[in-house]
Image 1 (cartoon, rainbow, N blue to C red):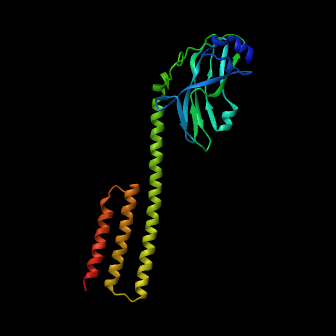
Image 2: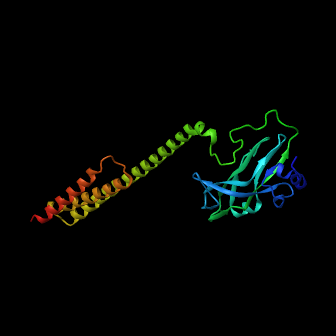
Image 3: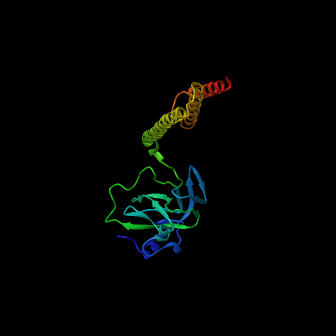
Length: 258
């Protein structure tokens, strides 16, 4: 059963350290933000770009009796502002500063400041105390401890996810590279065919054929070298550049020779 305002007010500082009667609502208590934690740094202000998240530590610290739980919910006004929120259900016997995560799901920049209210805690009285009140990793967490004792447990999973991410990026680069190579081959074939057909229709001699074809080969090699430098789809950077330079040199030499 949820506690109502008069019950929360009666418990007061016995339920919440830094209790303020002004924060009591009809079925809960509005928590005041005190700190914002991101990348191991704590600050009194935060700016969230679309899609970004930050952990929030509250001014209040809960001291739950053995027959009560605390549930954190996002205020309606903050939902409409563009926030989403993730928080645990605080268990019987839990003494801690309240921490929750806010995420900007809007398309705009959102600013956060200490002292503002983003969430409400709802207190629910149980039918009786459980056999084992909370004695977990985050007992007496007055300063943000991140993953706590779970850091080592999940480290291997994090490394696997990071490796999969790198594998996906490599696959993506490989796909782009293959597509560009195929396009380059088609462009090269089309260019060679059209160029040589044009030369045939113009009754060009062998020297002109060689000049134009070596120029085309130089241009295509230069394009391949540029693509290789951008996406690194080949192990050797030297071969395309060498082919480009050699083709241009032969074409220029043939042009100069009468």
